[in-house]
Amino acid sequence: MTIQEIQEEIKDEFSMFDEENWDERYQYVIDMGKTLPLIDEQYRTDDNIIKGCQSKVWLHAEQRDGQIVFTADSDAILTKGIIAILIRTFSGQKASDILDADTKFIDEIGLKEHLSPTRANGLVSMIKQIKMYALAFESAS
Image (tube, rainbow, N blue to C red; front, side):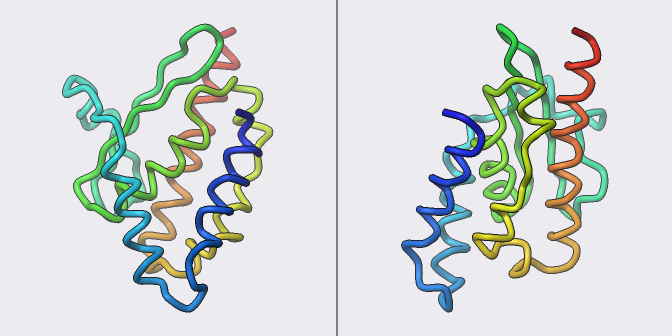
């Protein structure tokens, strides 16, 4: 699937919930975090911590067959769900597609506006780090 198709799928999933009931949406984000494949222990290092997040978030990327594969983890359940959404969207994609992708789907599902300011900043930092990995891999090829 393309990044845009995945984003549309996520928007459809969030549209199942009542717009006023954010408890259900938060629970869905948390549940998504529970499906996140565990990051290999060797990548849970300070070098892989995303700067700008209130919680600890580890993000690792490697290139396989021209696609970037991300793994991540967090010490906070909601944050783990947020990074799970981003990994679902961007993992397994080409660097150029990640760099060209917009992230307005985050606003369209209402997530950013319903996060605390520090979590919203963390979300921006996560997206920035994913794009930085994509830039690094694209520059190296």
